[in-house]
Image (tube, rainbow, N blue to C red; front, side, top):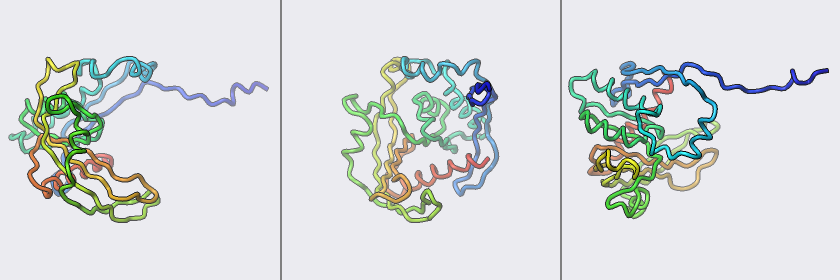
Length: 229
């Protein structure tokens, strides 16, 4: 018996990829898709290994798939008479310095969940180090579900701070430093059946009080509506 036919092998094949942007009101009412981009990859082989040898921040944004975030921002902003009324919300994948600069150039705004500990102020400290020095400025309860679907309340400690965020070292001659607001929301205690909440949001919008920080957290929570499109 030839057992080679019984072995399951996984192959990555080239398919069609899509990146879409959904318009939503502050009350959560979906307005429809504002932008959509389709593309294909010429090759999947070796892309993960390549990231281990090349610093992604040194690659021009024009040569990266991340360019789709900037293109969708431009398309979405072009649909409204006043781009300043739009806040472009994205998950950690959208924590791209070029996106911050593009929003500034278009006269629009952004609110993304941060995943990069960027250099801040004079460059001697990072965003996280600066935020660690800030005291909790308020608390806010939210309803959450654990891994089994059980609902409970999470009590978040809120703090916010305006920082001068610096571009990646490899691109500091191309992009300016930007004044941005970082919002931290950290859950108190250790919940059962789920990971504790630790959000790091970054936005170009000013935040002057805890209520405004909570407002931005609520806006970010609307991001999950795109998962249901």
